[in-house]
Image (tube, rainbow, N blue to C red):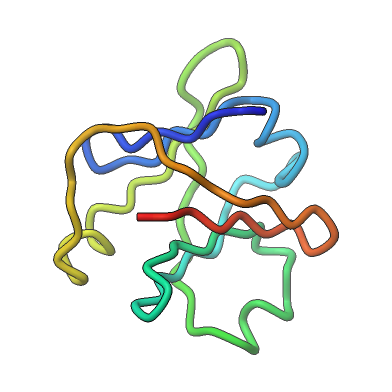
Length: 104
C-alpha cells in the first residue's frame, strides 16, 4: 500500500496512490472534518464532493521522477491548530468515489 507523509506542511503522496486516484488530474479538493479529525482529498473531477463540502482547491506538485506528488496544506493545518510534525499518516482509500480519508 502506498504511503502518505506529512513533511514541512505538505502532504506527500506516493505515485501508486496518485495514479489510482488522480490519473492525469493536477488539482485536488481538500477539506478537513473537525469531528472525525480527517482530511478528505479527492480530484477536482469529483463534483459530488463540492456539493457535500466546501473544499479548497490545491495544486498537485510533482516531487520526483517516480511520480510522487505533494499538496501544500499549511493553511489547513494552521486554521485548525493541527500538529505539523513530520510523520507518516494513516489513511483509508475509497476507490469507487476516488476519495482519500487521512487521519490527522
